[in-house]
Image 1: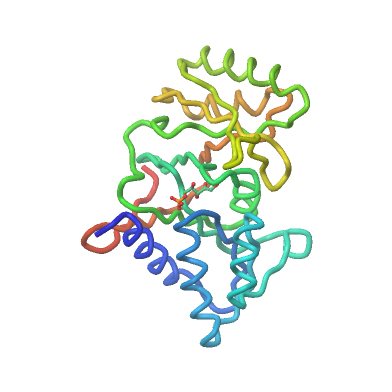
Image 2 (image 1 turned 90 degrees about the vertical axis):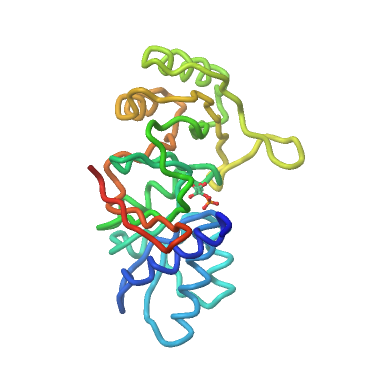
Amino acid sequence: MSADDQKRRSAERALDFVEEGMKLGLGTGSTAEHLVRALAEKVAKGLNVVCVPTSDRTAALATELGISLTTLSDTPHLDLTIDGADEFDAQLRLVKGGGGALLREKIVATASDRMIVITDASKQVETLGAFPLPVEVIPFGCRTTEAKIETVAAKLGCKGVIERRGDEYGEPFLTDSENFIYDCKFGKIPDADALAEALNLIPGVVDNGLFIGIATVAIVGTEDGTHLVEPK
Ligand code: 5RP
């Protein structure tokens, strides 16, 4: 079974946690896309939910499929967010932002009572950091900010290439909030809690892709079905 089939499985299982009348956060990425498609089928059969998307991409797909959308301005508190991840560990600390939506994803997840992570089995790791950590940076002064990221990370035992993300035309990738993403190839992050806090103290850093203490459960799609991982 392919990783994509495992993603679909986990997304479909997540619908067991969705109840009539819920206010939902909808994630971004290929796993979240499976979720949006499966949710749309339930909505077409009469399920009544209202959703806040975490990206323009997810908003466009949900609208096309007939899912009712709202905003955090109109609906500041959500029942549940369901989103993918690039990596997670046994404490259910996540690396997110591979799709460039980490800022809205974190705002929406933390506006929710619960966050369910949907993934294929390859995303569980012992130590975070194999997937490059995305850091969202304001364009103004970005070289200065990049140098500070390097210094702060090195003090916490994280060394490696830090690269500004490009788009398919070779231009800098811009997030939905028109910021840059720096992908930090640390390999291993020895102290993810400290790094998450330290990065966000740098002027110019908007947020980073470490989600600590936010996810409540992960639904992992496997060859045999799905299993749940709760934080240790
Ligand atoms: C987007 C994200 C995604 O959740 C993450 O990249 C996982 O993507 P996929 O479901 O395509 O594997 O954080 O910013």
